Length: 82
Image (cartoon, rainbow, N blue to C red):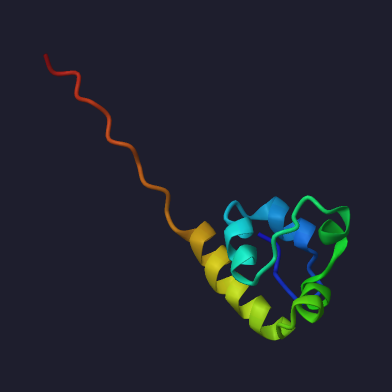
């Protein structure tokens, strides 16, 4: 995955991380369908919402990247025994 920095747009985060909406909602951001939000950087969003960009970057890395790197569980297959 691409490195997350204060210059990463919310659109990039939403596109690249399946759980991004949940993490961003934790910052009080809910307007994901707004065209402007797709082009807004983490730094710009932080200024609008009164959150330090570096804090947001650290939290996004912790929650998004760590979650994406977890090994996927393998499904147990039923035995062919009769």
